[in-house]
Every structure is written in C-alpha cells, then in structure tokens.
Length: 137
Image 1 (tube, rainbow, N blue to C red):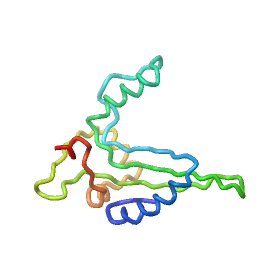
Image 2: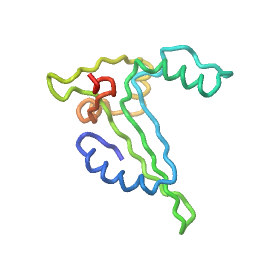
Image 3: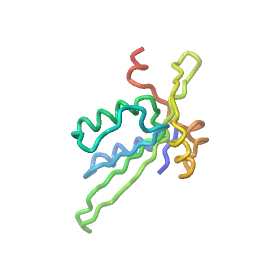
C-alpha cells in the first residue's frame, strides 16, 4: 500500500492495530544516493560494515520507507503479510520552518526512475518530517 500525506493518518490507525499482532517486521529504504564514504570490506565485522555504510549514506535523503508486517496464522500454519511504502519528503511546512538541502547520486536517481519510482508523488504528496536535530533547533 502506498502511503502519502493524503492517507497517512488513516494508515497510522491501521498500523497501530496490525503491529500489535506482528510476528516479525521487515524494513527497506530508498535513498537519493547510496555511499559517499569508505568502502565496506568483506572482512569487516557487522558493526564495522554498518558504521561505514551509515557514515557514507548520511549525505543522502531517505525518500521512501518500506515496512512489511508478517503475522503467523495458526489455523492455516502460514504467514499473512501486509506491506506499506511511505513516501517521505522533508518539505518545509511554512516559510519559517527549516528548509532541507540534500545530495543526489545520479546512478541512484536513474535506477529509481528505471524502476518506476514516482518522483512527482514524492515531491507533491511526500509525508513531511523533521530530523531529530532540526526538531531540537
């Protein structure tokens, strides 16, 4: 299910109920770029690998957050699954709100476009948000 600013409130109510009964969750993210930092190596520990990827991706913007909720159905011994794709875009809510600047990596934008990512939906209907740092300021 695609989630934008136009249906966000309704989906939150639905998610509140679904998450209470979840067996496990999967998350995914689409970003305006992937890596601008040190290369992760095959001999890195999981913590080192994560730290390198995190450091290298901090310049880029999360533009879609994917969430899949799995619930085990005892009667049929199978999992039920529900997926949500949240279009998120930190557009300022008014003239005095913080205005975000971000980097794009052409290969990432090109890949998203080739996969049918709807940039118009992102920019027009993306769910606005503030980072924790901007919220403090």
